[in-house]
Length: 65
Image (cartoon, rainbow, N blue to C red; front, side, top):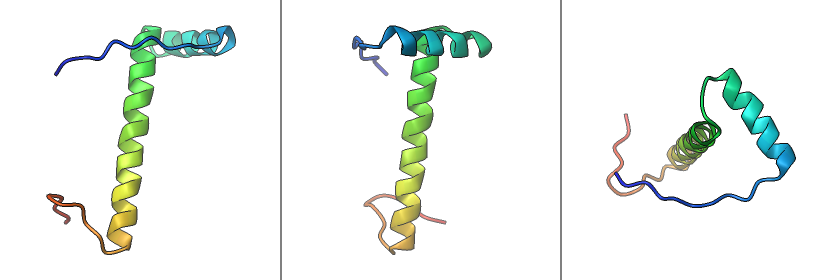
């Protein structure tokens, strides 16, 4: 898997908060941001799947239990 390298524009205040959080988690700021984005994407995907299941719709290729 290749990684995309994209700059982020963060305010100094937000960066400081992320820096504190990342230190608590023993991660770099970059690792913390990647982890947060990964968790958000997985949560969104799960929520969408649940909504589709409730509506009786299943995306192509998705098998449900």
